[in-house]
Length: 365
Image (cartoon, rainbow, N blue to C red):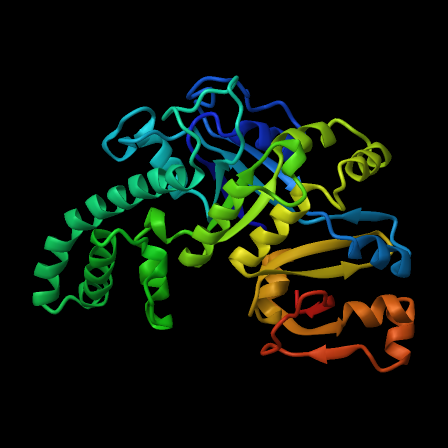
């Protein structure tokens, strides 16, 4: 599995430019006016992982297939969206569909690009979006809580579980805090997720800077990083303009361009790593003569469920998983040498997959 990440933010902060660069398409119109993105644009992007080439070389694979992430470019939000201002209702509905939010904030000065509020303050911009999401969540929960209280009084099992969660979340939102900071018992996580709260989704702040600030950021991005730390969120610095340039180049040209800008890697790589960390995702691999392939799972996934990511039949008929650590597979030169060195392990149904595991599943048909 990958994950679906919604790119959100105020109008004219660089959302569509970043989306175009990420997906290497011009599917999203980038223009200097609000709401140039009317329908959410969706694009898949390969996850760059240098381990794939090394595994393919060791396994003598004919092809390499990276795992993929889905990005959704969502229409720009304005103050009052929770009440339907601008494209508010559509914006909020689209956010409910994603697993995480990449919140693009403008961290650059440019008189030629207008700001919807007439000033450059990325922290205030982030607060504007967060406030609208909190207001929408609060309205949704306040509509539900009265009925939940009635049902809980009648000993409705579901209502008795949901009511404390809803009341605690309402208290947080009323205090100006997002739902994601609520301390939820593991037994209640499924019920809490079922509330589909906008502010329960993990957030990654994407600081869009000018080219000269792409390596270290600036005062604006520093302020966003401090805000993210306070919220338990994450932030990453990217120049959407640089990413747009890189998207048009081949691998050699891109490497030269990055070097000329004093950058070691594309911002996309940093964004994906931050996204993985945000959602607690890891990668395992399958290697054979036909292909070396990367698969994404959540940390803590057991072997049968990891097998199910490849095919549901693998999970249903799971017997065991031959597992070789990435370092052993590459360092020893492939599956056979790893087996001979005693590095191939047969793991059962309770085995928890680790990042970098090279796995071969045995199953009943």
